[in-house]
View (cartoon, rainbow, N blue to C red):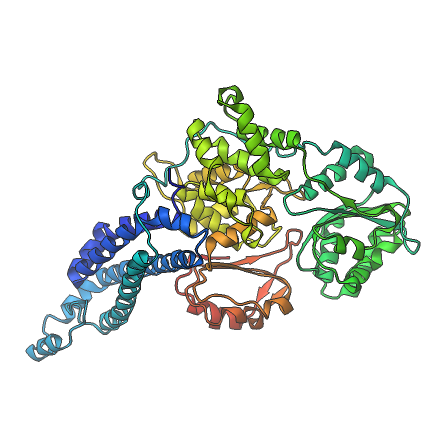
Length: 608
């Protein structure tokens, strides 16, 4: 049984619908483009028939992955040129009366010139300077697309791509019909961590700390997907730490920006925006709110091993009351030791037991079905815990995947998939790739778009749905549902599959686990990029000319130098400014950016 359709299939279905639209057909007949568009449609349909095979082979053949990325880039360009056709058709319809009146008295000599000046694809009935310029420009683009399409068509044979299980279903954009569910009430259900929680709480409540400070550091160390953030959250929200005041939670991620982290801590404590740019001023304010107080701070997802940066960050913490604590979650024991855990040491989080792993899986897999209806349940159990390898994220994701499958045969297909035997490419767990491959095609496109989100970024459901709508990722169906309502159903489906999860720091928002974000980056190919707040690191960032979606973490003022990485990019569809989760300031963009940069992005669909 073939793996689920690649999200490119849904993209191609949209193109097929547009290629058959009455307005485009009328324009194509008038301009002599009909044979070209028919050729495109025929080639793309043949290519579409091998997508299932290509999707499987890309996992072991990097050349096939590149072929799929090139096909996606081509699909974007075809859609762009269809947009240009539609725009030109509307323009000509608006100017036609004036144009026809102007040419009623045209001389026969002009008619002779028309006969000499012929475009290779367009006819010359629209004899206006604007139309001529459009025709010449389009001829070049049409020829380039036809050539690229021919090359991809021939390469499918070179890679041995064949039709398996028929082509992707044209109904792939239909939403999965499932009883209404929400994972929010069960989002905080934690299994197998009672002992770990008690030990970390003991470390937090201990009065031991460095001799030169009134605070202690409690690092929680473990591999990605092991549940470090979940454990920290359980401790942070426990009644035993209620006497800590103030409390703050900050996601650090891979860029250890001392100024940004200091501001985030201050804003989390005061619930007020901080527009200061000077680290000394920020830390003086932070000292004022911490002095003499027993505080609890969580620094989630720390990567930096730079001791000097940590020394700078920790300076204001020394004024707190004795017993203050900083919980740090990290994948690296070296990071933990750099931050000076003192005599209490760090806590090394272990894998879940088989029993607890099965409990996590059951919670998500049997939300809407009877566990007793599954044949060979004990055998299934053994295989599931073996696949999950003691990782809560893997158990939750696999459970979310199998929850949407009906019948034992579909469960067998997933558990027997060859994807389990693949290495963890780029740190992406096989179970996560498997979950992606079994997403319906319409959800694959929406999920891949989420690669535009920075790691650890808290996002709003409505904002993301509106971006999907702007990008044309939500396809209108025949049940009269509004696009925003349908987008909400898409979002809830991804939420129920544990692709999204509720934010720890803001219960009204959502976030993707780092490993899920890595998966989105992999799925999007070279189309989505996010610029970080660290300008020095961004200087070394290489952005593909194929990029279509771009976001940047905004600072108070954003000048042209920040966007140097976009110098060779011209086909952006999304230009998105993102403010850090705890910041509410108004930010500014240089006039040069607006005049020089944005004007070249003629394909923009979302600008925010």
